[in-house]
Image 1: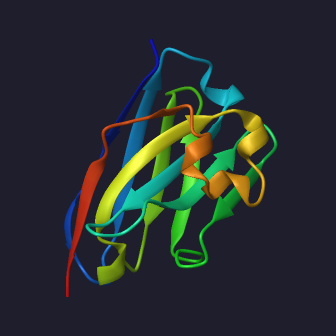
Image 2 (image 1 turned 135 degrees about the horizontal axis):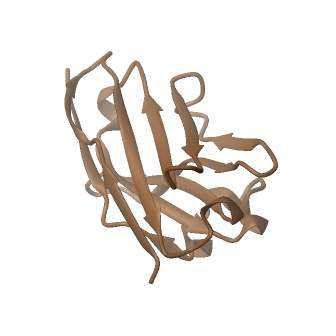
Length: 128
């Protein structure tokens, strides 16, 4: 039974930082394209970042490049998203996702329709 559980969300001031975590279980963690999506109220879900650690590749949305870093710890089966210099527009529910390694390439990594598994999300709010 595949399970993805996000944590680390919260409320932070603009310019601040948060680190999201996603604990994965029930499948071979390192054999999947792992990612983060987010959805703000009234907006479409968008891809934030993706990683296929086996090939050492990462992808980022233009809006978060240089501010967010995706990483994973295979020993802990945990995916991370370090978010720095947060902006009001970063406020959203953030979801951890897992899919086949074939999706870890442009532009497919940002397509939520290709995701196999996702968690319930963790909420990030930003105060200006």
